[in-house]
Image (cartoon, rainbow, N blue to C red; front, top):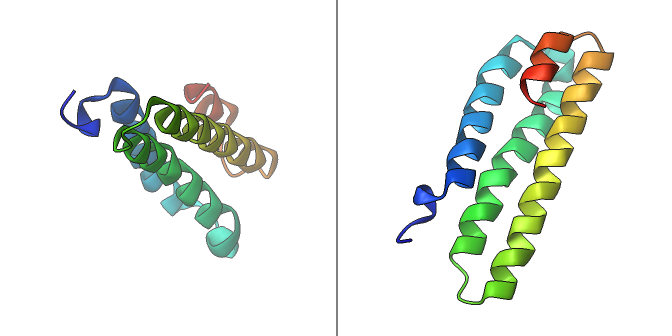
Length: 98
């Protein structure tokens, strides 16, 4: 595989990042530097870690970054659950990510 952009997992991470970037614009202003910032950063971290792992020359390094990407994905899901609990998003929005 020539580029990380060929990875299906990276393509899915990109979709998640773009969806989240779009809908956090509707979050309340008071959440801008709290939940909004956290969810954007964690969603970006998914693809970043996949790309960095792909760029490593050792299989074990790649695995380590894939594990970190999975952690960022789980963190993003937790931020979405917080947004649900705070009544910022609907259950249907949350279910679209699960």
